[in-house]
Image (cartoon, rainbow, N blue to C red):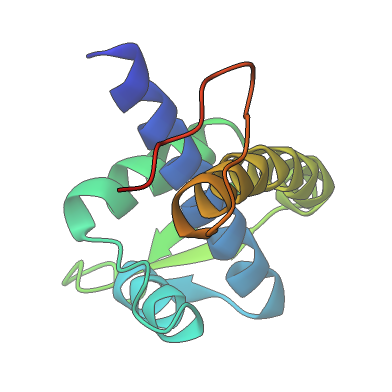
Length: 133
């Protein structure tokens, strides 16, 4: 996997993981409900599919951030996830990591906005401005 793809996947995991912990902090939930709430809360901008969400939930469970159990153990219908004390204590560090990445993205977006949407010729990072025709 390329470095760029790894960076993107890390970004998605931070966002999805943070949302999952915040949702579970409020109440236990099964995976489909977590995915639906993330989609709703982001206005559809993030819509985790099961191929991404369930491996992340398993990883969070392995790290002790959440626990899970079958709603009906005899039928294994829905797996209910609960946040642990360790998961609650992980939220502030995930928020800080998200904040840092968001600030970095905002700087890059500001550069693009300034360079591509401004009618002014701006010298960004020592590069020649894009010439107007």
